[in-house]
Amino acid sequence: MQDEPNRDVAAGSERLQRVVLELLLAEQSPGLWSVDEVGLAVGDEIAVGDAIAELHAYGLVQFCGSLVCPSRAAVRFEQLSQQGVL
Image (tube, rainbow, N blue to C red; front, side, top):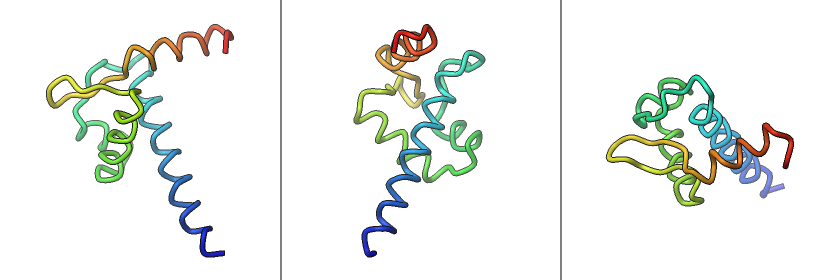
């Protein structure tokens, strides 16, 4: 029972990471986003900072100065997914 709140927090964090990554990978995405812009688009500026840090740690996003964009690996994975290869 005590583990349930922790699992809920972890699941929420993972969902937010997915939302952020999908936003960055969207076809209509401008490519480079500031962390603040991502936070405004998603609606939770503080949690988005944490999600971006996690995605960066996993190598799924990279920073270009103060801007963030998906890594080449994330873009390629998305391309393969859309082609039905994965």
